[in-house]
Image (cartoon, rainbow over all chains, first blue to last red; front, side, top):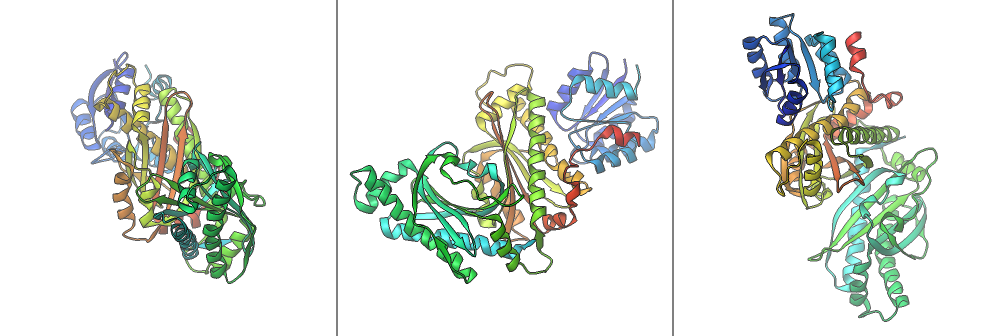
Length: 119
Length: 405
């Protein structure tokens, strides 16, 4: 099963993503900010990171930038409530592979994952 | 046509002084001590005028006025309050006719002072009709807002007057015709840096409505509860009046600080029952608890986060900029205690504030949400200056398209 790291400061959203993903994926970590996301990525090297943008300490775009600079093959899907064009462009620039906006439902999450990490 | 901040402040001050004069007149007539709580100038969609009156029963008086300004002005108070007022005025009313006459007389004296202040400031005469007695439920008590050419927006001056030691409120509405008012505003605007084109203010209000609709869609998607955007308005009021914009009931919700142009604060607030209902609708299992649990709060926090994005993303996309915001901070307190520190923060740099308000409701369950934004005045003005009216509809961005480019 593909390994997934979930980075979101909302416990509610981490639970929701876990419920959506755990049937077909192995959740290797759940973290609450961008610093923890980078650290856990280094330790676990998961197949995919589901990355929120607005997080305390370090936001998801900066964390994606760092993960991608260390591992250009990393797969990162931004999973965020932010629907701003400029933010989407920043995410592309940071190296994000996909972008889904909250609120989402299972099919849109699975579709985005399939685009980035085909089964 | 432009309106500058200074004339907005002056006009708001005029309305406040008029309301204070009206209140003094009432106190002299009845011995009832009352204070003007809030005066604000709002730019509202015509259909939303008077929404804050709910469905309570009101009585009052209405005048037409014409001259340099033209339109309608109304003083209304709750029907329950009428008896006490009439008793204070004439020692009890034996008949309905006497009660109506008393209401008309109080209204006449109060509102004459209100209108005279405007005429003096404008150096012109404003004639008004004799008072007409009005009664009705909620917004229906108000006259239709005067037509305004090709705009659906109306400027409304609203004052809320509270009877000291009693939970009784009066409202004064001044509904000027759009064209004469904007002409007067333009005549009093200087050509300095702080002038705002009125049409851009309207576009911003439309964007606010669109943001509220997006936030309502997000609520529906997360909870399955059909939710509709109800009201959106942009108001201008002294900083000291800002905390009074929110009722003093207990709210649960989120506060975020946004940065960019404009920067400021945004609150998403639910009353406690709504908070519990909406949080449970988001969760797969029935919580079966009367109190708000940590799970309820986490759900509210996330909903606030998503509603906030739905609200501010449209601004960012239309303005072709990015508006960052902090993670949501959960709040559970009385309304004024929530907004007080935010108003104090904004008030460090400005004496008046724009307040952007929206509400949404549903018929499915007891649910009501309020969104209030307090942007930095100078930055909002800059944002409006940068706003391209032709981009007003471009509130959504498509990630697929951007990722394919």
